[in-house]
Image (cartoon, rainbow, N blue to C red; front, side, top):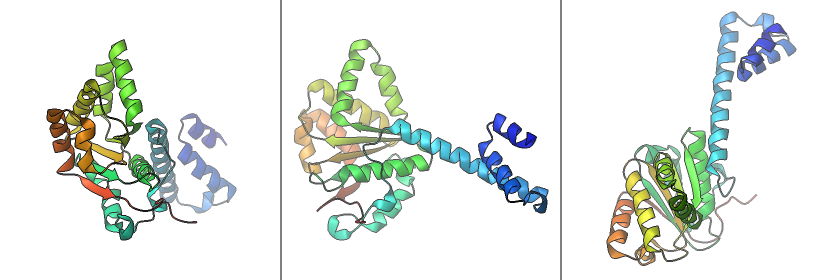
Length: 238
């Protein structure tokens, strides 16, 4: 009991769990020292991975609790299994690439974006999920209270930024500039997922100002993964 109390006191919860299990199943004296240590270290490592993943997921504030395992990939729906497999590696995050998800209301854009975000958290990446309109309200308020540079720096350091509901309204000039600065800071360094009801070809008109639209789309489109969803929700039928 003293060993268990010490492990718990040191916050080695994974190790404590294995120690307690070995005691309860009466395998403690049947397990070699090396085997016991290995079991405890493996459990502690997994415990820390899980805690980090849970913390990252909580901080990301996803729209949906979703996983890639729930995604029903089908070429007729505009989503290939090969693409999901490729994105699941997380290499697009390491390369600072964009994923552009488009499709009609209810086809699963936000669910797919959330699933990719959750998977990134499990892999240890820092993720932030925003409805674009709410983010632009947040940047507007940050300009008023003087915290805009802190906010933009925080966003720029996020491994994966997810912008949902892009293109619901036309953008004011300052909103255009804010998006431009966010995309510029992330270009070829940090990954971005954008979900929109509008096809990418229509984004130019939504952004509005020609020079800014050119700059934003140039940084997003050319090296991006494109997903054009069709049909109903991507969630697997239970």
